[in-house]
Length: 238
Image 1 (cartoon, rainbow, N blue to C red):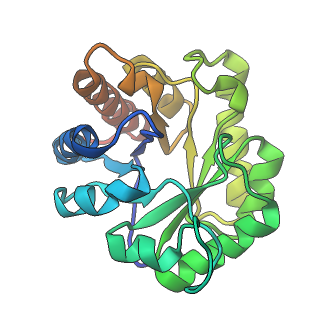
Image 2: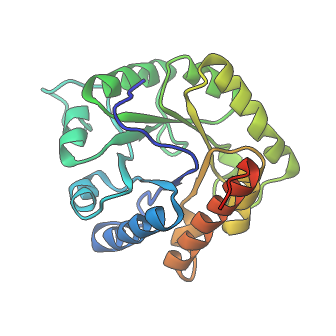
């Protein structure tokens, strides 16, 4: 587990996927930079790899992560994403094993170790509580727990909310230092509020923000809701 850069709860991940790139990605990232300070929420932004240098050099507070990383050393490997290149481009971490880009469990373990070697924060997606447990044994920095069935849906049933605490405890039984982000099914600030009130340390959204009529306003709505829910849940004095 890499310990050089600290991300504290509550934290939020914005995953542009391939919806956003270049100047438009930079605009949203700079708005996220302002929101991070305004509401004291750690924000992870996962742009296209080619946009990492642009965003890293024009933001100060958000954490830039690569959308993917390959387990390779410098040398042969056309079309792959080299860990050292991610780091030098300005990223602080990497995302891995999203439902749209699967990797095997052995690859996950190797990637976390490579990230530790290079100095990159690891954020690994898990589809199920059982997979979250398997991944936790590799000691990543963050586990992103999200069911593929909820991605893009925007509706979490009561049973999905109840899974939050269960997954947290399963992961923390193995390593209490792992942060757990609960994503998918997030379309508005109320959705963020509810997952945090149900025990999430972090959450995030892609389509809920990027397909909103006003992505900037929706991002602020979500970050504000996260701050409110976290303070209420943890009885933070204003």
